[in-house]
Image 1 (cartoon, helix red, strand yellow):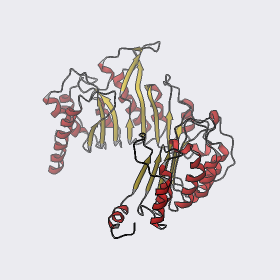
Image 2 (cartoon, rainbow, N blue to C red; image 1 turned 90 degrees about the vertical axis):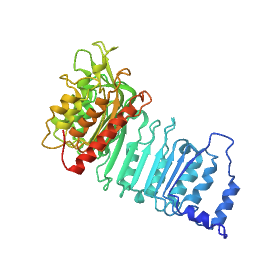
Image 3 (cartoon, rainbow, N blue to C red; image 1 turned 45 degrees about the horizontal axis):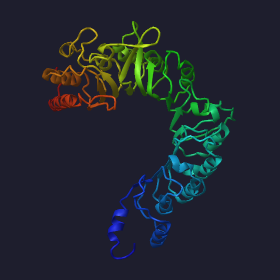
Image 4 (spheres, rainbow, N blue to C red; image 1 turned 180 degrees about the vertical axis):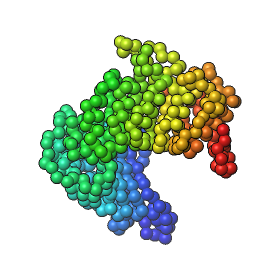
Length: 464
């Protein structure tokens, strides 16, 4: 480590900024014994192994993991972020050795992530919180995620927050035993420098009672994790009554892989909250047969944004559509359940400030009033304020037997460049359930749109 041939090692060691440790599944991988790390530590003579290191990530390391021997050699004075995940947090050595070592040795630590998805009957012990209090004064970012096990009571959570005097970013996915309601806490200032607070909710459409009012009031982002279908338009009513008083709330996500959500249950978020981002990442949106047609969902959501008189910057809607009969059973919905290209005209004309849109469309069908792409271009009336959309993500839902024509490539590219003059990129949504049949076709459309944009900007005019 200090001989004439070590210069190359030191040259590269100073460049390393991030190290990720994870135990190998195969027994054939080479294993460094404890004696090897002891020798390495002796050779370093108290110097860090990687003197420029910034980030350390331990994921799924076991109690006898050889990586534990490297931890004290990695704690360079430059380390600012440490992420510890999953099974590594369950081994006794983590509590008795790794976490205390990090707290004492990483003197420049600013961001800490503790994430464990495993189920624990006992839950997360107080040793976590007692140790975190010791480094609370130097942390600027903290991410605590223990979704499957009881982790903390309200009083302990408040005591923890009192010590975070310099914390600017906090993410919490921590819960009381059986999601029991938070007990009242004394008033007083907590988290005085906090700028972003993300709460992950695991009580369906209701607000998780685990989080006390002083956190809900400071929340800037909330994620609803749903394990059931949202069947009623009023499911979120009680949660919205509370969130409407949270003046800092700017981002809402509804997340439920494999679940569907009624369109009527999401528009109230846009009516009642002053959001900058709204993401619905469920499997599908559904509507009742004979009521609001599925292809009007995007327009109804857009109308809710316009009625709210605020600037939504990012909007994500589910890929799939589902039609149910009056008894709630799924039925055939036909191709018209997906928005045609004409739906984005309303977005371009009316949603001011929108910068990112992620939607599914069927570009093969005519518009709501039988518009074609050619007639949409011909009849386009430029709004007083051009659309600010910069990124468009789409899932093409046209039938596999409806191929693109050469005219469609040119006309769709022309339409997008006309109605979205500030557009930077059109990309495809990637999902394992989606066919990639149309990806290449949309790449051609995007190439032609970019070519038009470059020419338009160089010549300094807008062409129709």
